[in-house]
Amino acid sequence: MNDQLIAPSSAALGKEHVARIRAAHDAILGEVRKVIIGQGQVVEEVLTTFFSGGHCLITGVPGLAKTLLISTLGRAMALTFKRIQFTPDLMPSDIVGHELLRESGGQRSLEFVPGAIFSNIVLADEINRTPPKTQAALLEAMQEHQVTSGGASRKLDEPFFVLATQNPIEHEGTYPLPLAQQDRFMFSLIIGYPTKDEELQILDATTSNLAADIRVALTGAELLKAQQIVRLLPAAAPIVKYAVRLAGASRPASPHAPDFVKQYVSIGASLRGSQYLLLGARARAAMEGRLAVSVDDIKAVALPVLRHRIVVNFKADAAKLDSNEIVRRLLEVVPGPKAEL
Image (cartoon, rainbow, N blue to C red; front, side, top):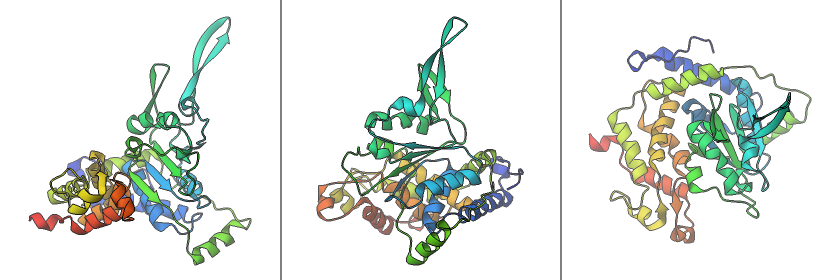
């Protein structure tokens, strides 16, 4: 992508701006496809978080190329990438950094040694394997894009993304991610096994000596400008109200919540839920080269935005209902924008 991507004012936003975002999206996707086979929806949703400026939580069994996908995206955008393997003995200072006592010329001073969080893309691998104290070290970084150590706040490099993975098949010795921290993630994605044909392609690609040449399709500075353009995309009032209704209907205390929500849900989506519904929809529209958000954009991002923000109760467990099913039912019963016209 060329360097003509400039974030305009809302009044000057035109088709050429979203056209460049679509071109960047297609170029990045082309580079990723050199390495990643299949997982089309997951790749699109990770790209949506990048163009939105959000963070992503990915759940999947080992060996499904989660790390490879994220590192490839970093290479395609010339972004620095660091991987943190979360373990029970990992300390917050291992992530944020620490102060080291130095002596030079008879003088002693404290010098800050940056941790792995100082990178454009941070992969928090198996984040549920470390205690809550260490998990919480990411909270300030994810929300404020800064860390505090030794009483001083230090800004992180922009753009900044946290992509965390969880292993769903092993629960012994793990620490479930607190709801307050899950809420910081824009999307919660589920990555599954490839199809038979995709697995054949993967075997052919990974058991040979061929190495993909990943080229830079978008720079970090251009990505920041693209994020500004995404936030300028217009969304009609009925579309915004639909996002609010959809998130609000997931809250059992709401008078507008359907009966199945009051029966099966203990905690509904937070305010971040409706915010990320709209932001994700804007990013999706821009990635497709459209100047306006549609109701289909809201529906397309509803599952990854809401699934980790809805907590079901024991009645839902007994009925074998999870948050995914609750979101699907909400999409069926919550009236769309036409209902208020």
